[in-house]
Length: 343
Image 1 (spheres, rainbow, N blue to C red):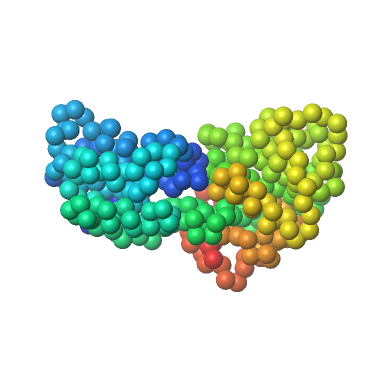
Image 2: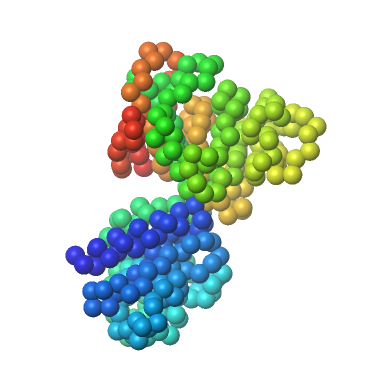
């Protein structure tokens, strides 16, 4: 039970890196000596120090001598290879830490149990598999990135209680302020966000995180016929933007890139482009046609639906949840009910 409690603390720390470490995993580490936490840390930014490094750096000078008699807890297997930083397994051995507890082994072929094996061969007591399912859910984007060799695709929409996305050809506000803030948090935790032509035209969205905090994601817009005028927010060149389609004006852009692709190859090409750019989490916000395309082609991993008490009686119908989708989470935010589905 104590191991589970400390690992849950690792999960809490790991989540602090959401939106900043992708395509790396979110990782938290806790160092415990005789039931007392003497160090904590998390992976704060891609390419920078890992959780184990930050955890050991956080140990106060008076507790440094306790490190060789402590247990290190981590939600993911310590890295075994040289990447942007040196291997954390070597760090653990250098500090003579005698015991390590982790939730998940790292699926990266460069690690894949080798880190734990190295620790064991050096005499370190290793335990793993505790809260394994929780760890898989925490780092689901990373596991998709490694096992599927593509970004994790999250479909999201807001609907009324009677199943409508809004009124036809009219911008319709559905979500409560609290739910809107949650959506902007999701945006901050993603690498890229996508909308189709109709949504871009009708809603003129900014696709930023102004109601939360953190980085704005890469904005992606589908506009095969060049219908979106340069006066729209998505073409304001304020942040990195990809447009799959034609240039509709002579405006010179520095942060906006136009890409050409058509037909059924669009989603495949899009995901490949995101992979090449190291963008591991894609949030698809609509509209209905685009959402359905992702579901029909099978390119989805998660569906997030926000349902408000609002009743329209008519309008644009929301997409249907696939029959093989499984309800993973359900909770309330303001006047909205949030349901999260996985395969």
